[in-house]
Amino acid sequence: MTAPAAVVVGGSVAGLATALALAERGFAVRVLERSAPPPEGPAEKAAEDWHRPTVPQADHSHILNSLGVRVLRRSAPHLLETLLQGGARLLDLTGAAPPGADDAADRELEALAVRRGVLELLLHRAVSSLPEVTIDHGTAVRGLLLDPSRSRVRGVLTDGGGQVPARFVVDATGRRAAARSWLTAAGFPVGDDLTDPTRLRCFTRFYRLTDPDGAPPGPLNRGNAAGGIWDHYAAVVHPADNGSFAVALGSLTSDPATTVLRDPTAFTAAARLSPHVAEWTGERAAAPITDVRVITMPPNVLRATIRPGWRQPAGLFAVGDAACVTDPLYGRGVSLALDHAFRLAGLLDAHPTVGEPQTELAVCLADEIHRPWYEQAVHDSRARGRLWRARADGTPPPSVPPAAPGRPDLAEVARAAAADITVWRGLVRVLMGLETPAKIFDSAAFRQRVRAARPAPAATGPRPPTRQELLAALGTGRQE
Image (cartoon, rainbow, N blue to C red):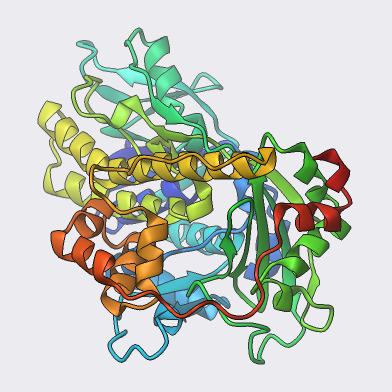
């Protein structure tokens, strides 16, 4: 067999998207994946039956935000069309614009409602059909092949002792970030990753609408979701494909009083207390199709292997969670992985010569894509964690410095966005990954609009439960 141009280690979303992007530019690609291939058969059923022990987050709710949709529209329209034919739905986020706004049009403000399993299965099938791509399942990688000068990679070594030569290697191993261990084993010093905890755990349950073709049970007050991130917990509905949706409840990992949310009865009680979520979980609206799934969220991480100034063998690149992990509560991961995959492929196509210049360009690209979101996620995770901890302890919430000097915090921007369509559009473009926080929030004109915005009318309708009300409904109030 002729050596492929690229070996992609890891066959989840980031690895498959990288293989797709490279193959469509004429590169021969070999994907090496530890787990078993997906089952055959109708996509929805196959996705539900696909056991993914190496991807624990696959069983939880995901969103493909506006950045992800933009990547698909520009770079893989055939895949977007396949997803829509498979039951995914496009959501128009301008439906959540301030009341009375007459200038909410923004064609990029859309999201894709689809379960992670369905997205990944259809992506796998699209990549598998390409003649330039070979996917080897049940294959683990234990190290790198290096050239005699040890200045560039020449492929990988598998656990079975085999050698897979290639011009360059892509680490798409997710949160394992296996390139760190490969480099360490080869004698390369690896710098410390930047990391900061999210302090978050998530309880997820999937449902199916009783009438998938009817009107939704309630409005999507967040544009692509319903619910909220409140002052002591989060409760959010994420619409998905084929009449399904997920309800995700978030709480502190250090909050034993909310551990009971893993019980379906307690989970339902919390969901039905939560504004905009309650309507979706009524007995007539939908029925659960899974148990409650629990996951401790990973920390925010910016890998040393994508930070400028650190030297590594040429021809080694990290994508997806192997490059950066940001707080999953904000749903950026899959979209950032898609963006990175296609932009990296474009860079390698434009600069095909493996060497230090190519590596430096790729590292700078990864840093440009991920660092703004890592820094924002660290700030937001800290602010949320401190607020929730104060509510649990019954103490005043501490003040949190802005993410950048003079930058308004998200709560301040959100209040202004409720009355100012320009502020609303800027905020949503940031939340959906289309613009960086610095580009929007650090604009003098934007800050002036935030300061000048008239107070929005007082909110009407149901309010989220207090901490005491929530725990009373869960039967854990005496644990306070």
